[in-house]
Amino acid sequence: MTILASARYRRMPWKNGGGETAEIAVFPPNAGLEEFGWRISMAHVATDGLFSAFPGIDRTLTVIEGDGIVLDFEGKVTTARLTAADAPFAFAGDVAAECRLLAGPITDLNVMTRRAAFQHHVRRLRLDGAQALEKGETTIVFALTPLAVRSDAEAETLAPRDALILDGDVILEPVAASGEALLIEIDTV
Image (cartoon, rainbow, N blue to C red; front, side, top):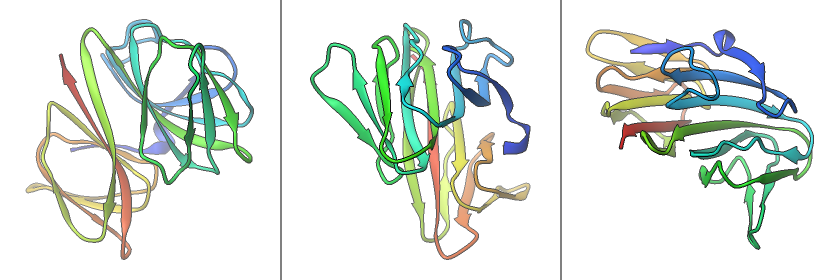
């Protein structure tokens, strides 16, 4: 297993220049915004504004801190209201979106895959005890609370906002009475 400590995430400006993101993982390694096959990042959003356009990219956004946001999509009558209690929200990066904060800044986790090459799924894991996780093609755990993780060969602890890339099956369990994580699964198409 490979642990990605949040203190070591690569920080860079947003594509639209409106803020900063912390890049958690990208494939291929060191790929830029125009070359990545998949990318996982975390952003602090302090003001309302436009989302960067990513043609050919599928995105999933999860609010992990703060009251939440509303996304308005260009040409769409519907909007998406996202809070830290909601399920991850998937949408096409091709469609222009505007973000409105509900009540103050938020932090979000953003998973993006190049539609022609990869697909992804993000879901919340609520842990009241140990849970076995099987490695898929690319499986990543993003800790929202402190978590203990063990495999046949090693045992580690994830701090909140650390990530874990699985290279085999693991057991994940909360350090306290309960815990929470995001499970990210990425596959080639």
